[in-house]
Every structure is written in C-alpha cells, then in structure tokens.
Length: 221
Image (spheres, rainbow, N blue to C red):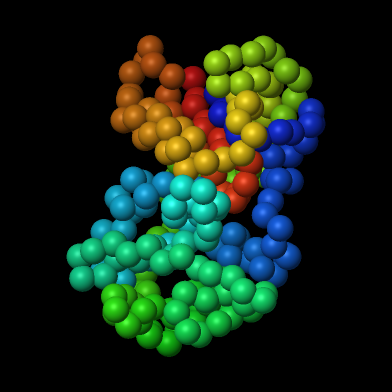
C-alpha cells in the first residue's frame, strides 16, 4: 500500500494527533458517519443524489478564506453548500446559534426546518462515509524510506479492525493544506478508484477527516 500525507509528523506518531483547535465537545461532529472531512465538492456532488441528502465536510470556500466547516445538502435537484460560521463560541448558518456543530445538525434534522429561507433545504437522509474513506488514527508512521516528488516516503502501519497492513506513507512538503492541494490529491484518488488491473496498483481508500495538515490516499498492491 502507498499513502499520501500532508503535514509534519514524528516517527511512530499516530496520524490522528493533528486536529483543529476545537474542544472535544466541539469536535463531536467529526465522529459522525456523515462527516467527510476534506472530501472536495467534486466527490460530494456525486454522493448527494436525492432531495434531503446531507453531509458535513471541510473546505476553503474562497481563496485565502481558510478552511471552514460546511453543511452540504441536496434540495429541489440542486446541491447547496452552507458555511457554518462561528462567533463567540457559537455555531450558526442563519439566525439560530448552537454550542456545537453536532447540535446544529441535529436541530435541523429533528425539527425538519429549512436550513435557510432562501433555499428551503431540509435535512432528511445522512450520507455516511464510503467504504474507501478511512480514519487517520488507523495509520501510524515508521522510519523514513526515501524522498519523492510529493515529499518524504515513510514505512507505516494501517490498522483495519484486527488486521494490520504494512504501508508506505508519503508525507507532503506542503506547509499547509489548501483547496488546490486537496483537489489534486482527491482527483488522483478518484482516477485510481476506476482502475482494476493485475499490473496496476489497486486503490484502497483515502483518509481526509481532519481539518488541518493531513490528507492521506491509500492504495493496495
């Protein structure tokens, strides 16, 4: 397997340690099946297929704006992407404010109220992570193997349930995650998912749940 990683890690470090500056309660939404991390809009638009479908992700809405948490939902055959704002420790999209992003999402689901008056979008069906989306804390980095165009290549261990796989991990030279970098890596992963050939490295999955510094693409030989 080969993994691509954005960010700086120490040898033996688990890839789950680099997280946003939210408290544990504020990050509770990251543990939900409908949280897709840094998955870009190109992939999101394919996951949202029916009115009422929804998920939460992280993206850079505008260049230089920085990474923001976004609620994506389909309504009236159109995909809408709502930036979740934060002010004074409260999270909101429209007028109603909440102590956490999880409570915000749960409110709109339970009350079946439109996320915004202009879109009238209602959250009905959560879209879970796909079989090729993995968690960062399943990967542990080991010794450095070499250097590539993307960055340093390290030995690593991928743990899936009770099974452990030896992997190669590419650590990016990029100092920060940008929308362009994320898009390029996920585009490569999207292409790899289409290939099924004995002489081509088989795509295994991608781990992009965290809001900063880690983007991992995983392939299996």
